[in-house]
Length: 485
Length: 95
Image (cartoon, rainbow over all chains, first blue to last red):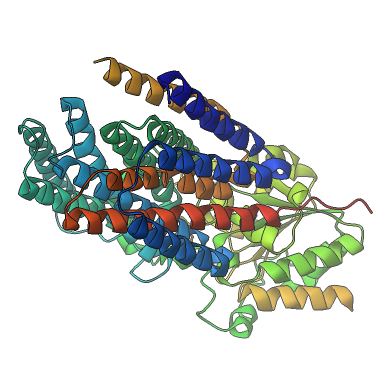
């Protein structure tokens, strides 16, 4: 096959990828876009089979079928709440493939290595291995297999820097070995890179996970691209670069949504670790842990005096019902606490009741709600909320003044006005959903403890706020019951 | 040297085009987007298969086989999960 024909076929794959991603710009075309991208990879795979004579087709076929079958079975079974852990795990699997391919290619005496190929291979090995270990830690944290709080070792930054420097020095040294780096050298590099990934990921936790998982998305892409450079396969570079771009965008979006720099997220835990250690936050459950406490007990001592004591202060549930019955526009602000309490189906049930009464319902989704970018949208879509009712922060914020009730379910930091009113809190400058501007805010959180940031929420003190502390499922059932009566 | 230049430009160009296209994906679809690009990053499966195109030592065969299995898991799983997710997004019917 002539070189130009090779380029032409590669170009076909690239065009398919472009069309696929282009279709992904709206929920209507997304499914077709995903299938087209899958088709693009299939074409690329067939091209490779056509161009190379595979010497052990039995092994290739067997591993291919095994891997794919496990992949499909796991993908069919996973729950939507577990998607972040699953995606992180898949990043890890991709990392393994990248570092193994680089490792074998660097080692092989039959392989022709340019110095560029050698450097690419070493980088593919390091980034692939670090992506693997970092993703495994992230996945274990997201699946609640290990402590979700940031684990900070003594001298963590110094340790991380030392390992990174050692890796770098050894990588440079390896690049100068002729004709190729020795196996032991590559193995040491591999171990160092794995250690690097662990040290890097372990001290990120809770609400910062979306940044970590986006970043690992990008590094998985970079590893694939370097892998492509050592194999001299253009399509690997194309795909790797595209994924790297996507991961970079998502990382940037997440950082912006928290008003933090990447360095601050990855290293900043160190600087604020003292403040954070003293606040009683358990990050995954920070926004509203569903397990602790009984609803009735907490509801009973819900601070009724904060509610504007008009006449003999009605119980908060009654006050909230009263507001909801009179409301014309309700905006629901779900947080990860809602997802943990599996309360999204109750939320939707309540929304349907209100809609039947002619109320205009919208769901306001903060970019960092959930444990990966956009996670909350998937959870709500699963609970059969139509996507035209899911509104982004920028769209809904100017409208809060005309909203009768802002119903907050399991979110805290993303509606904390301290972020825009106070200058010296960990969340200062973070864009928030302006629930405090609504005519009334009803808070269905587990308790009044602050969110992951540890910053007290002044919204709770507003006279227009009604606090319904307790298990969100129970509270919402109470509201639904009250509305149907 | 030309090879190096070609590969660097392929990377830069793909990154740029990818960046332009993907920055227009709404945050509504960010989770399926990451899941899909995650599957695309398993393109390393091509590299893993090419490892078997030359005569290799048994140890290399084992490593290559693991690489293929891992990448296959990643690529099929990624596209299947993405499909499950994007199927969930529905528009409200006009009543």
